[in-house]
Amino acid sequence: MDTGLPDSDATVTIDGTDGNYTLNFTIPQGPTGPEAVGLTAFGGLESATDTLNLTQNTPSSIGLDTELPALNVTYDTASNNLTLNEPGIYEINYKTTLNLTTGGNVTLAVTDDGTPIANSSVSANVTASTPTTLSGQVLANIEETSVLQLTLTATDTADTGNATNTEIIVKKLN
Image 1 (cartoon, rainbow, N blue to C red):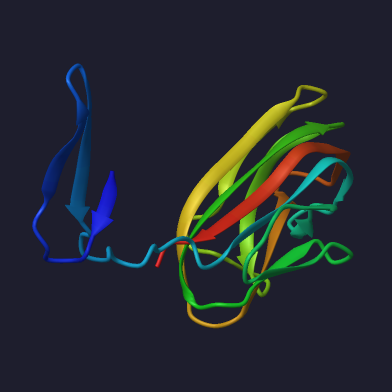
Image 2: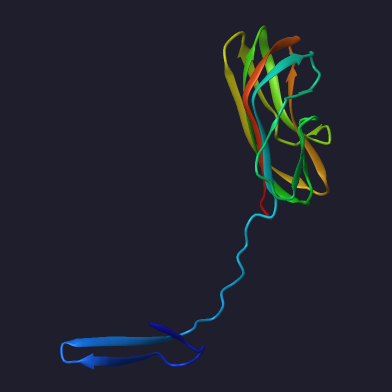
């Protein structure tokens, strides 16, 4: 099989002798397809375990110490944040499992430069010493370079405990 010039005719020739023939095909080259388009920004941070010391009604960042592969996203694990370096619409997925000493109402949220992203807050009434998973997904219109953090707020009382299997993953959709 051979590839012919664009816009040429397809051809078939037969070579060989009685009982031992070979068909030779020549097919014209087709048009060049569109350029592949993939994600232009993505990334994430995760952590196996973080010790929590929650102050009532004060957002606290969750420790995120493991960087995931990234493109146009940068990390500052010392500050538990990731920076989106391109504007656009982002899908943000996040989760954590809490095991608190006292328990009570807790809110998990994604913040953009310290302000909760609209519709990113997930709340639960956590029972003391009972693992509880909170997770969410939100679409956010990021208009400029943004620093994201995953925060917890205890609304009933101060509390201590652990956050395990925590992650925040972002991908730019446009």
